[in-house]
Length: 483
Image (cartoon, rainbow, N blue to C red; front, side, top):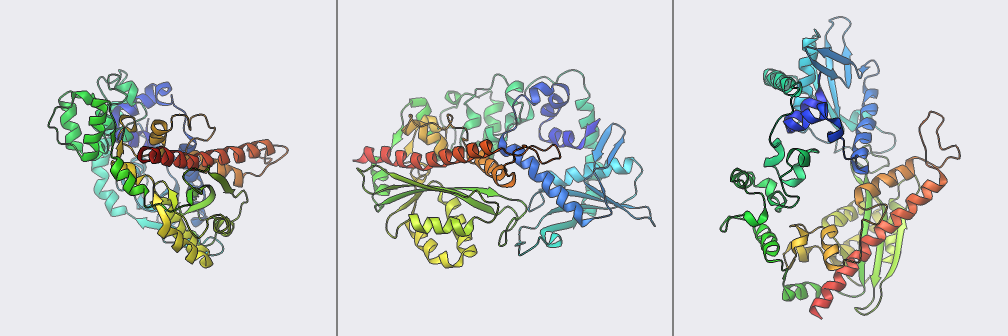
């Protein structure tokens, strides 16, 4: 049987789909991250809520025909005409034309093969413009788009693809050679890339900055059997970031512009406030004033440095209630960020975006955030502008890449929570699963014990604290270069 899920995997990477069916131990070798698990749970949450739009609907109906299998999200039937309406629920704010249409067209084909008379094919997704006020308004929260004509247009093409996919995954002999992802940048590789492409270096041309956006360039290198960075021919047209990435790798020597670094850092005004937020993107708005996937700021860490020679002091905030943290979050910020001094962040678009949203939800804080906005300095800009480039940055300006080079004594991999996706997932568990002496909700679903809750709080504080201390340590390392 070719399932809808395996068809979508096949469209992305043929060999990955074959391995999923025939060698699941390879396909599932790596456990899902907390972030990936959260995506699955979000999809389930949205799907269950959308069913309330159709009280007489049929849910998770399974259809099998001619070697194809589809499980529909929602199906409604007319008792008079016998026709059925097909609905696919997506936990997104918009339609993804690359996958959503093919997903629905696969189901449409299977149901038609099974003898159903399909009156309409519809995609249901979240409405990014909806702002919660009081109880959830499901008719406003969800958008139902009738895409029947589009699906009919695609029917023959998708039917042909389904046959090819079925033939491919039912082959007993494993496909030889590399997988389709060899022509994509590292971030777009499938889960079994290393297995299917054992001779591709762990760090090579697939890791050049934004190489996935330069498909012709990547294809030319691969078709020339060039995979190592030191094999790239002299004169190959590369972007400035790619050029610097390659040069530092080949010469094993960093590029450091002390003059430009000094120019950036000299704009800072003491005291310095090193600030970082942690947030949760709730698909279903939990509180008034929130739209689908609006970030809920639930934690911040702040290291304050009074003079270049002093040691930073640390304060933080973590909201552990199940209601809206916004008011308390803002009040804590106002208490701890003084009226003078630069506010240092990493990748300022994120914090600035949250500040604008908080100013709307907590109107009397607008002046405070307007003042903070003028004082924000993005420490990442030094690395984005290529004032400091190291081969171990691997073309990235992420703090996770910069920190081990400038301050090797500080490490994220020793923490229980090591990145923002896990932090968000842990906070969600913390605030939606209250402690229970029995550690169960009476239906067999595990809940957090008091000890587990305390552990999550401790780990969240440690992670966020390292984010801001890391910024301070990187600033200090840069400052020492120009002092």
